[in-house]
Structures are given as structure tokens and as C-alpha cells.
Length: 504
Ligand SMILES: Cc1cc2nc3c(=O)[nH]c(=O)nc-3n(C[C@H](O)[C@H](O)[C@H](O)COP(=O)(O)OP(=O)(O)OC[C@H]3O[C@@H](n4cnc5c(N)ncnc54)[C@H](O)[C@@H]3O)c2cc1C
Image 1 (cartoon, helix red, strand yellow):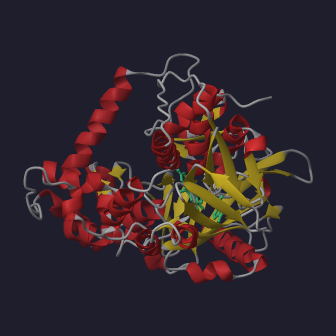
Image 2 (cartoon, rainbow, N blue to C red):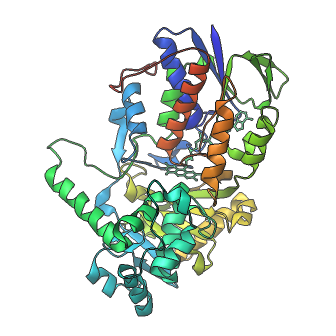
Image 3 (cartoon, helix red, strand yellow):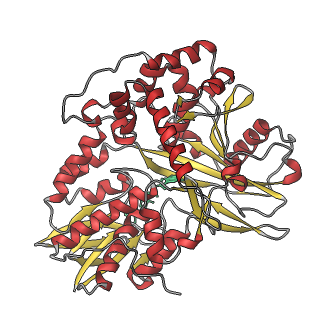
């Protein structure tokens, strides 16, 4: 029996472990052991069901609160696990984004896609940008491409930072007011160093194809509208939304993956401290000194956590992992009595541009974004603090973080000054978000080439090719396939959904 140890029980590690469990269920002579440092599975997915003192409960996601519909991995895995029915779309009837501008909240104008306007009237009438700012954005229609790519070249050959690109095409206001908080915000990244080729290569490709982002996004919008018109929702069908979650929160997914892998194959609350290859096999050392022999290893931990473990595997991999910086953040979910919330509840989020120099980066109105997140007379919000330029804020005490988030939220939304949350908690994500800086794809390619040459070893996770949950699951699956194949196990699956289901 071959044994593969998966280090890290986030969605990447679980994506790998679940794939190996399916290979075993298909009759291959292989077993998996997941070792996770924390006391629970899920990594950056963490849901708590919090009771309200007056009855009812809150579904509180402290980390990821959504997965996107456009990448199939989560739905595919959920179908195999038998939890597809627990997927719920966001309440799109409330879907509005507000942006802080001075002391006001300005709605993101209709027709803005990522950061490019595709509707004239909403752009003309919005107070979000100045008139010179609006005219500068419109210049995108006439500014020529930076350069024409030679045949065979891709975004990677013409990488640029988000800041350079947006300012070049649409001016600084487009960056400061929307691109930085919205596009940079997805990666909790600093736009001045964020690699577009590694995060949004489609922007660079769009410039090549259309010579203008406004024209490119306009075409995308029209295609999307035509598709919706061709495929109206059938009666009884759940409405489609770009964002989705699970009825009982995102933790449903890692829990179900863990159940399918089997509790006896998972070790919680123990960290791997050493990793060594000895004459063709592996030895994994845990923090209590136990040594686990293995035939293969999938390393699926944060970039900074991989550094010390990679050191004994390959010095160059260690060096490259060290060059992937990670930013820290904290989320502060809090609930208020509905009587303290006299504002319009039809929105999902508030973005706070860095130029506003406020401690909060964003606010989610969880009880309007998702159904049944809070008792009916309560409003559940979530503040987001930190990111690459404000990491020091995360070091404050829980009480200070809660007070900062409360004060900012109360002020922004015009709530009574003394409004106090009925509950609040802090989730810290230290080094939680890898930063894909310029040159990231070259580093990842080199790591992949090096690991390809190490038998029985693969790496997975958000540090490499996408921070989104679906990307991380797929990276885990690829890593499992690589190690299985190194061990001479040819496991192939159809994509029909047959799989190992969670027990119970
Ligand atoms: C606040 C926040 C909000 C986010 N929101 C979204 C969202 O809404 N949608 C979305 O798609 N993405 C979101 N993301 C990104 C996404 O959640 C993550 O990129 C993804 O979950 C990472 O999965 P992973 O398995 O690669 O890593 P992780 O989830 O970081 O898992 C790595 C695991 O390895 C463990 N570990 C580390 N070192 C060791 C060791 N030595 N031994 C044993 N175990 C170890 C850690 O404890 C951890 O559990 C968000 C991220 C954050 C931080």
C-alpha cells in the first residue's frame, strides 16, 4: 500500500486528499493522510454558527464568504459529495456596491465592469469621478495599444502592474476610485506591485484584441446579456448568481471533503516541522517528534509556511517560495439590532479606496447578500481590515479592532453614535493572502519545473496559480495526480460526478 501525506487541510490540501481517496475507492492501492496544524479543516474557510441571546442564530463566515460560478471546481466537487443542493446564490436583488468618497457613500455606477464604464449616462451623472476624471477615462477609446504582441506571445511576456496599466489606459481616478479597491481588493493586493499577467491577464489580452478596454468590456457585457436572454431561468430553478455560498456557510465544503476522506485519515492540531527524502521515500516529522514514513507528499500550505519545509527538499524552491510575499488582514463580523440600522439595506458591499486613508478596507452586508444569515430583527455586517498597506492594524487587540470597525460602520451608515453590536468577533488572517507581484508567473513556472523532477512530491495552494477557492481545489487535484502518477498509479476520472461521498 502506497501512502501519500498531504500537508495542510485547506481547500487545496483537501482537493488533493479527496482525489487520492477517490483513487483508492476506484481500487488503487493507495492511502492518504492529511496533517493540519489547526484544530479544524478549511484553512481560509471558517464558518461559525453563533446563537443570538434572543433566539435564532447567525451564520458567520470569518474567511472566504463566496465562490464564483464561472469556475466549475466547487460545484463539481459539491456534486460528487452530494452537497450541491446546499449551494445558495447571492441575493442579487440587493446587489449594489457603494464606494466611500469623503463623507458620502456613492453607488458604483451601472455599467462599470471591473473598472471600465460601458454605459454613458450613469458615467456622466455619477459623482464618483470628477469631470476631468471621466474625460480621461473616455480617452481609453483612442489611446493606442502600448505595443502589438508578436505571434505566440501572451500576457506573461508583456506583464504590467495593475496601477501602471489602469493609469496608462484610464487615468488615476479610475485606479483610485474603483480599480484599486475592487480589482486589487479581490487579491488584497497593492496595485503598484500586483502582476496583471498572474491575476487578470484578460485585461492585457483585451487591450490587444480591442485596442480599448471600454470596447472590450462593452462586447463582454452584450454577450452576457444575450446569453441571459437565450437562457432564462426555468420555473423552480435556483436563480443564477456570480457569487454563491452554502446554506450553513463555506465551512460546509471542507467539512464534507474531510468526511469523504475519512476522519481516520486526518490528523488535526499537529504541524509538520520537517520533510525529508531518504532513498526514494519520504519522512514527515510532526511537532511532537513523530516521524511518518510516506511514498509521496503534497505540500499545500501558505507560501511562508512552505519556506522552512521546502528547505530540505530543494534549496532553490525554498528561495522562490520566500519571494512570494503574503499580506495579513482581519475580518470583523458584527450584528446590530435592526432598529439601529435606519439605512437602505439593498446593497452587498462598501469599498473604501486607499486614497480615503480610513482603517477599514471594505464592509459586507452579509444579511442582505445571503439569505438566512441572521435573525429577522438583526443586521449582520462584516468589516475588513488590513491588506498590504495597512497590515500593522491587524496587530491591534480584538477589542480595538471591534471598536475601529464599529466606529467606521456606524459613521459611514449614519447609525446612532452609540449603536453597539449584539455580537462581534475577530478573525485574523496572518500572512493569509499571497501577493502575485511582477515576475510571479516566472517564479511559479520555475517551481513547477523543479518539483516535476522530484519523484513523489508536489506543491499546491493559493501561492501559485489563483487565490480563488476553485483554483486552489484544482491545484490540489493536479498535485495529487502528479504524485499518483509518480507512484505508478494511473487514476483517471470522468467528470460525471461519481465520487466518494461524505458519510452520515
Ligand atoms: C479573509 C479572506 C477572504 C477570502 N475570501 C474569498 C472568497 O470570498 N472567495 C474566494 O474564492 N477566495 C477567497 N479568499 C481566498 C481563499 O479563501 C484562499 O486563497 C484559499 O482558501 C486558500 O486555500 P489553500 O488550501 O491554498 O490554503 P489555506 O486555506 O491557507 O490552507 C493551508 C493550511 O495549511 C495549514 N498549515 C500551514 N502550515 C502547516 C504545517 N507546517 N503543518 C500542517 N498544516 C499546516 C494551515 O493551518 C492551513 O489550514 C479569501 C481569503 C481570505 C484570507
